[in-house]
Image (cartoon, rainbow, N blue to C red; front, side):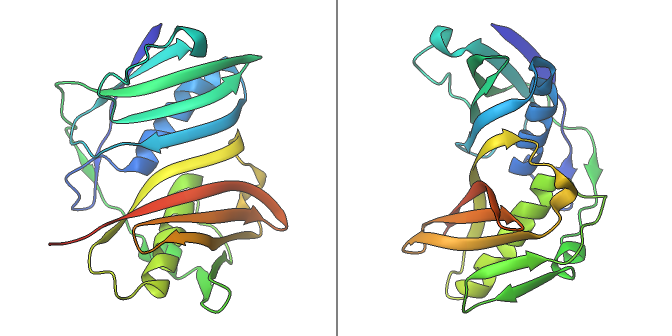
Length: 204
């Protein structure tokens, strides 16, 4: 078992750690093992705390999830691994602006095809920030009746990073369980590079 403390910041007016930052920071640290393959990132819940990344060889990981905020399963260096993000007592001590409108202005939505495409990327955003923002924009177009919030909850891909500077990026909604859980296919040009899952947090 190895542990790494990860420090985060709040985005915009949000009072929780963004799922994109959990994935990005975790993968940046785990890349020390080598290229990440068969990546499966699942966010279980929200948190306003900094996190500790706890890494296990897959055959040595505890059966219980240790009340993890999120979990990553992947392969690297010819071995299977499990990493869990656990809350610490420390809170983020800074806040940064976060403008999704910049991404929205670079996208086009085809509602009949249930698809969104990116014309060009902006370097101030990470790959996962762009893909999650695009998927959120698509959901808001396709599900105007949902009054709550769409939340990024899972990402799967054959490898990470997906590479190629997001040239020809498109995201298509391919499955929806009512308006509660969705699965979208992420493509670079004609190649499927991953799947994005969103859940609806309904306002009461």
